[in-house]
Image (cartoon, rainbow, N blue to C red; front, side, top):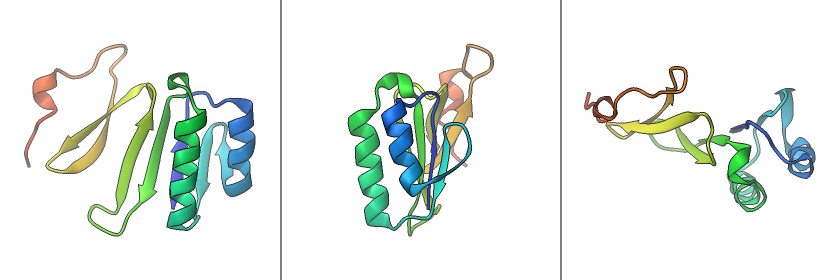
Length: 106
């Protein structure tokens, strides 16, 4: 499974994404493509999306926690890792939590 969230995709990329994905909301794409196709889609996004696109990619993997999160550009959220678990830190207005809170070990 692959889920792609974007702030702003170029029209050509968005049209291409609609070949493999459903788009339940603008710039939210969901698909159950095979892993090899998912890797190709991720490579395509890295090649054709600028940092303005703000892409967050959730990809299913066969080990704990069952997913991998990647980003392209500024997704308006920060990707962090706590004890090896990838999480998304929501920005509070224009600021983030202080950095000392990012390295919490559970």
